[in-house]
Image (cartoon, rainbow, N blue to C red; front, side, top):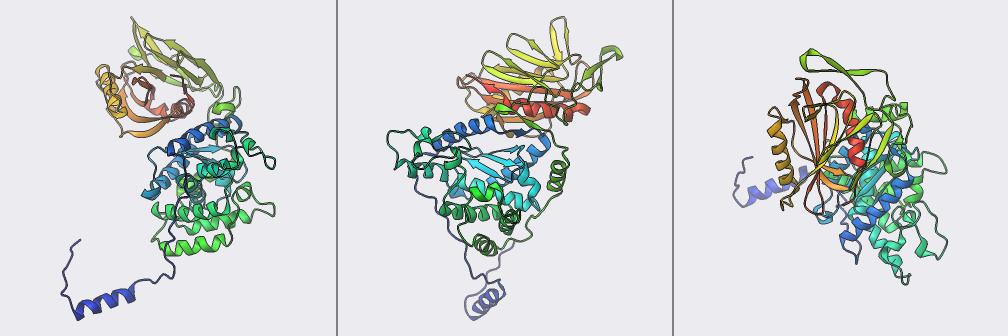
Length: 477
């Protein structure tokens, strides 16, 4: 853009006048949002959020469909990037999980652990409305309303630690029993003051992310239209008064051009959920229920994938089973499809289906499945650098290995991690294959890794299993 310098004086004043007359006039300026006083450090939000999330996932069934999960994560990440700088906390790692609950609800726990019911996605009229609900929830997180509310309650408690407020997820406390109040009381239901703050900041986050904040107001209209009793989200989010009006007023002040209202991805995901085509949920502790049929994973499906072996021979490799089996290793617990075998080596363990691995004169290779192991950190506490070293080591035995993209931030279990996709030519089949590498650092500085491998044409089928494994692995170091 070229900038021209105009002379001072009457001509400049006239230009300024015309500019002012031509500009849109807003009778309402953006509302300034101020976070409440909070005596706790952000690390306490993360601690309480982790404990609460573990309790939630012990009781709530999660949706086991990577298509829906990845879509909601994509929207959530876009919104989290739209949080204003003054409310960004580097300690927080916003995560998004979809529950298999038909209730129209969503909630976010301190530190950024966010849950969206499938019922909310099905009820929303467009992506903007769904994004509005998520933006409202992560606004509570960014403003640290959870621990601020704990601090207020602690004024009336004696001799109880902060973590003592964690009780039953959906427990209803008796009057005066603040020490027994559950997550539902502290982290899912806020005061009208906090609700209005989350409405205003939520509208700002939506605008920063390219969404129309009017859709946040529209979401409340959609919820109110659900019936006299109203959905759970409204009962958990008390109306500060004139909610729709002041959100629309804020949206007018933000004056976003060409905002996002709807996308093809939302339409597809909503149709998938409404039709019942999404995979069913996971049971306690977030793991797939044993023997529970899931439409996304053929259960003992008689169809097989054919793998080209050496010398033109072909072996049959079964698609991943819908049933998962638990393995307790030395310092991690893992759940894998129950038609995969456990294959131990000195420094790692591989889980693969029959026909998906070979051991030729002591040289082990696998074409389908996932390998889990550790790599010595050598004092390198930088996750990316340590992962780079791992990839260099893998490349030495796989000269055709190529990066298919850059690093993505990932949660490995409940830890910060990285993922990267690669392409390769299998030395067993001679065919193209896809490789997914997931990494996180252990407390002793070593690198913990999971490497998922599948032929290129079968990758989507196997990738769904990889996602479930990585999200639910428990590392005990």
